[in-house]
Image (cartoon, rainbow, N blue to C red):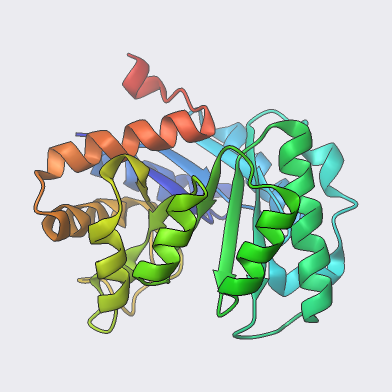
Length: 254
């Protein structure tokens, strides 16, 4: 039984090596470490270069939208880069002006189209504008709502547009019933699992730093929620993630 953590933030250097080995020991066959600024994207690329079961994304998070996207184009051609993002809108914190968030989100959608890469979306308290910008720019053929926090209505709107739903450890939290309802209505072949580590550790690790190894616990929670065998959920979410990002994990290939 093998899993893919399709969204995490692995630190560079030896600390990251420990995270990766811990994930391998837990049955994680592949990890996608995600850029949130140009500098963090470079770090993600460096982490991916150290491990044949880790890949990187390049993007600017809405919190850092004032940075702009000018530095991303060159990074997208680096080895190991498999997606644009995380990009999107965050109206919960508003760390960047909303008009700047919108412009930078749209620019990253265009990059995904230009390079035929998946798009990784972060959206919080901004569903209508997120869908509006996606509809205006055109939804890339491989698009995921990472760490999905919506309910059934938002899930339906995403599924109608061909968007994949990625489930984090939030699904195990007591106050996450709308999310659980959304997961129940999502076809298994449209689901992926993630940790978003070091954030949002699932129960029983809530309140502690998250790690890619803990994606197993999120996947197990999804299986219980769907009343499906955990092996089926591992197989389906791994197949979706490897196809979505174009991954070739050596352990699965072997």
